[in-house]
Structures are given as structure tokens and as C-alpha cells.
Length: 342
View 1: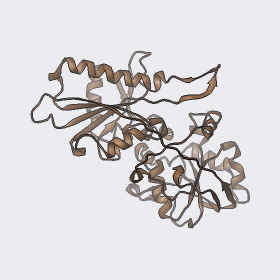
View 2 (view 1 turned 45 degrees about the vertical axis):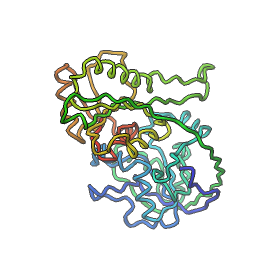
View 3 (view 1 turned 90 degrees about the horizontal axis):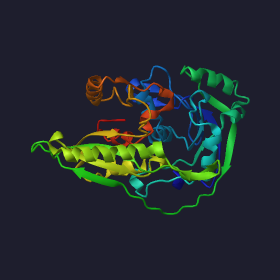
View 4 (view 1 turned 45 degrees about the horizontal axis):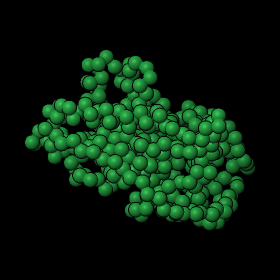
């Protein structure tokens, strides 16, 4: 993203509501707005009638920017929904001191042409609406219940100056293959994925700057290792081949899985499914399984069948405003048409 930010920019602002364009539902927040050469101001969230997974997909940086750029926008100002901020602003603000990352493969950069991209503290959002006839309080009240939002030009503009310093870093995915037992199916692959990065070193908590990531996602990585050990002991248990993929860069934008899904080590059409594990919590008895993407493929039917046999209840996304559907590595596979869930 940073590769395209302008060193200096000044432009008028337009409030575009949720800023969503969803062709499947014939929904378009950008319709009728003059965005050419302007900055789109977006309130995070989606209208209640939108299915959670579909709304999350079109709120991803790539899909959102595709629509905004087509409409003529040159940048984005995001106003978080106070009702769905699972990460407090005090923690979000610390990201300003952390470098962002993007893949070196130019074909995988999805925000080309975006000259400004900032997220604003909701406590400071009211100033954007000065003189517009609307208030941020009004917008936030509607957005809390996922109600329709108005869209209108703002009476203010924005001027920003930025300096971008770039350097190259390298990181690797780690991939293991376990051949299948069925002669007809062993050339098909089920991917089991988990990310091996966490936040690394950050602001100290009680004097400790090391963010160990035991749950996010040491637990998921350990689970994959345990599954690999179990399946290797019983080769006949799986007819298809299995790829165990430990991906890097999840915390920086799903970078490792994004690269693998675009440049897979096996023919892309041979991958039939991905099951991703992120923040496996082996702290309490498993009674309820939350599956993101439960309704999006027949993987959901398989999950329900297996869970029922174990006396475990299954639910879909209980908090659609958090956009969890696109916040871990299964999303990279979904974007390539591979059935996936977490």
C-alpha cells in the first residue's frame, strides 16, 4: 500500500456511507456521487440486509479500492464504527510506529493509485462533518444497528504530507506434503493452514516488549503439527493428499497465504479445500465451534456432520461487524475460488 501513497496531497472529501459496492445484491453506495479527484470518507460496517461473508469480502482493501478507483477517488479516510472496535484506539494508534508490508510481486498489489489511506480516531471524527448538516454522532447511531447511511459531500478538505521509506525483507512459508492413499484422489489436495507470525516486538506491557503470540497463533501452528503427526501414523486415513502450510505475514495483511494462493506449489485446480486454524483455544472443553464461511460452501455441511458426532454445536459468524471472515488466511484461498473455512 505504501508504495503508492503520495508525498503530498490536498483534496475535498465526500462521505460515502459504508462505501460498499456489492454487485450480487445490486447495492452501490457510490452511485450518483462525484468522487473524481476526491477522498472518500467511509464509516466501517455494512447494512443489516447484507450477508456477513459477502459484506466482509467487499470491505477488504482490494475490493473496496477497486470500486472507489473506478469511481474516480484518489484516497480513503476510514472512520471506525465505535460499536465494533474490538481493538481499542489506544492499541490501534500504536501501529503508526510499526512498518507496513506489501508483497514485492507487483501483480499482487491491490491498491495501486491510492494516494492517501488513513484511519481516524472516532473521538476526532466529528470535525469531518462540520458544516455538512450531519454529525458523526448521527452516523454512529445508525451504523451501530447497521441501518442505511446518508451519503453527501463534506464541507471540508484534507491536506496531508507523508514520507515513505522502503526496505526489502524476506520471509518464508513452510510447507509439508503428506501423500494420499487413494490412487484416484491422491492428486487432489486438502490444505491445512496456520500462520506462524505474531506481532513480534512492540510497546512494553509490564516491562515486557516480546509479544509471544501463544494463542495467536502458536496454538494453531502446534495443532497443525499434532494433526500431521497423527495422520502420518495412519496413512490410510486420508484418501487425498494433504498440504500443511505454515504461512508468514498474516499480521501484515495475509501476505504469506496471499502469495501461496497465487503461486501454489501444486496445480491450483488440484486444491479442493483449505481448513485454516487461527487462535485455537485449548483452554476450555470444546462445546461450541464457530466457523467463518459456514454458509459459503459445502464444507459447512461436513463440519456440522463431524461436530454433531462429537456432541459439539456449530455456529456461523456471531459478530458480522468485526469482519472476521476476511481477517485470517482462509480468505486468501476463498478469493481464488477454493472452498475454505476457519
